Amino acid sequence: RSGDSPRYPFYNAPTDVAVPAKMAKEDAKAKAAKAAKAVKKGGSKVKLLKKRFSPTFHRPKTFKAARAPKYPRVSVPPMCKLDQFQILKYPLTTESAMKKIEDNNTLVFIVDARCDKKQIKDAVRRMYDIQCAKVNTLIRPDGAKKAYVRLTADYDALDVANKIGII
Image (tube, rainbow, N blue to C red; front, side, top):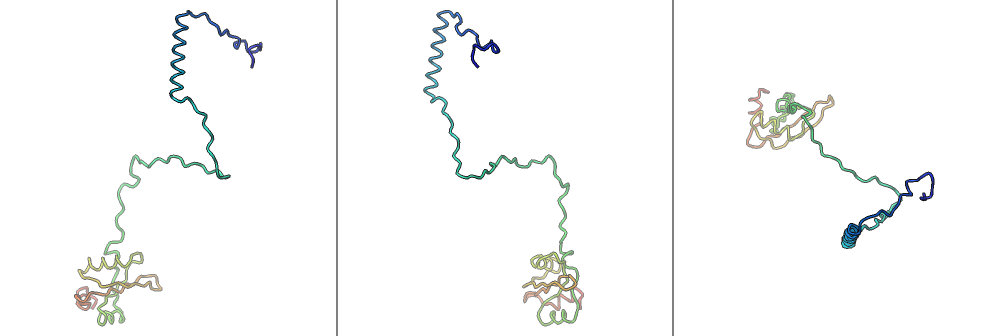
């Protein structure tokens, strides 16, 4: 908008104001020093737009603050639901299980369906103080898990079965 316009009279403000000669000289020196500093600094460069090599726009990843909760969401850590008493339900006393005890040095247990072989091995060790050579498992058609616990040569399955009260 030009300064001549009657709608914008404040653009017609006078640019020449009577300034004493001494102040004008100091102003000129300060202006020159400022210009020299700007030249020395390198001045402001025109920032070029970042080159884009893909036609699709992907939103940039923004800052995600780490969680810092004010209070714990759970008051007490949950108890271990599968201890050795929960894992081993009961020993099997069928004829085939008895045959396994006598011939293969193996005890047969019905165990919790959620536990794995390592947990079964550990539970037998903690309950009866015996070492297992290996554990085989299967899921019966009724949904119960059966575990065949083969004992090491140090232990006799018949003695352990007597101690448990199977025989």
